[in-house]
Length: 422
Ligand code: SAJ
Image (cartoon, rainbow, N blue to C red; front, side):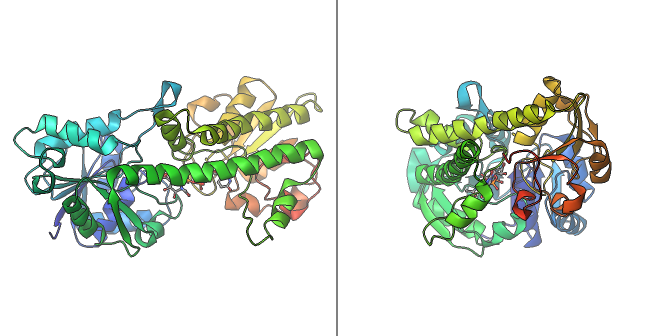
């Protein structure tokens, strides 16, 4: 199949770049999103998220007529579902966005169509998606009903791209393709081969689902190790940054970096899907989540301790995003720490976040300002995100402050750090 018409459901951090890359291969792409603002922005050739080079590609795709956004699904040859899969109460996966996408897409499906689930999902979700679609379309056949002969092909192909490097990784990374049948996998491979230069590796849907969860749980466990080291170093008065740099000189040791906690909508979320599916078995993965989730509290205690040295402490929080050089505040430990500082009235708080224009609601009472103003104003500087603008701050601009560097970008330069490194 040539896939002349491709539809992407969910135009967020994954869906929009994916839609745009298909459009750049001269396919007609219909992007669907429930957010009217996102739809309008894209149709003007602009973007509503921060991702390097994406604005240029979206502008080109829209102006050349290959990409169009709408709130209502239209017929296509392939549908890629890239909607959020957050967790709800008790770290239980919330599949309501996938179910809503299935309900929206089902009426426009026709014989021969391919439906791909890209959203990171608990094991068994592709089967659930197939069941939701089948319930809406008794006139069509699905893989769970008649295997290779089905009218509709369904596969899970988890996205694996790193925010900030999405456009490169979309093309270069290998893809794991988990079709519900071999025919589903073959068709899905054909679709991804339109732009993927990495390998398309075929497996079944359950393995593909678990593979994505495993990748993020692996990273979470390794970051938890680094965060635990930072807590141990605190007790033993050793610089964790120096320690890790030395230990990593061993040929088989590669420790990740400690930080203020693990954020984002992926690594802080996905391991819970494994824990939820096999609570007795997933003990290390659960503990890693707990270690990483506790890290913001440690940072908070550090700041409180430093603030105790001032009558009316002025605290500048550098960075709100969940990691460097992006605008994404979802599950951000920096945001959690900053709002806790305000809530606990530890001092006056100003925020420096070069990637946003307005502070979120949770930070009412704080002011958003630039690097210069914050450095002039603050007694305590808390580095929460290693944005490139912060790495450029020279040592002499930090010498008169109490500095709490949770990412090690300044501590690594061996500046005189007044407070203990977190
Ligand atoms: N972090 C640390 N120390 C480190 C590395 C990261 O504290 O050494 C923190 C970051 O600051 C951030 C969090 O972890 O708060 C997650 O950042 P990340 O860069 O590790 O990952 P994400 O969430 O941006 O993207 C991950 C990626 N998964 C893996 O690397 C295994 C990406 O490939 C996935 O596509 C993405 O999750 C996703 O969408 O699931």
